[in-house]
Amino acid sequence: MDEGEEGKSVGMARAINHANPAWVLAASKAVVAAAREKRTLTTDDVVTRIDANTTTHELRALGPVMRRAAIDGVIEKALQLPIKCATRPSNHRRPLTVWKSLIFNGKA
Image (tube, rainbow, N blue to C red; front, side, top):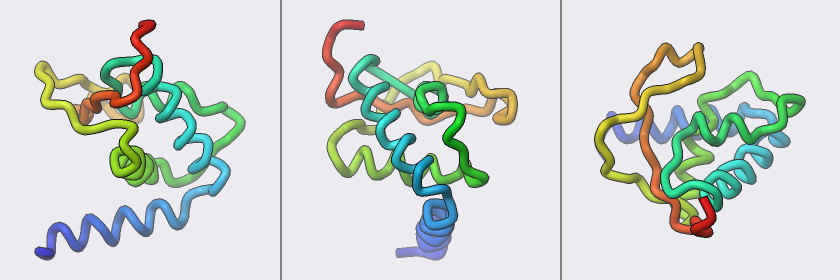
């Protein structure tokens, strides 16, 4: 593992370890819900499905939540263009990773 990958892993571990555990659980459930409802999704789709009363100070923990969902076979990175931009104001329209659902139920 090179320094960049090692730094990424350390940062992701730090983010998930310092996040509110209730929020991590809610985010994990939100990924599954979004993946069942949508062929493709972004973290914006996940955040909108997390109860507003369940919060964390460490939103960077969403990256490890998405990675776990990919490992669990719920989603995979999609090679999709055009790139989708964030809709949350705090993200300043930055490009988001688009994920392909592996559990889409075909109803949307």
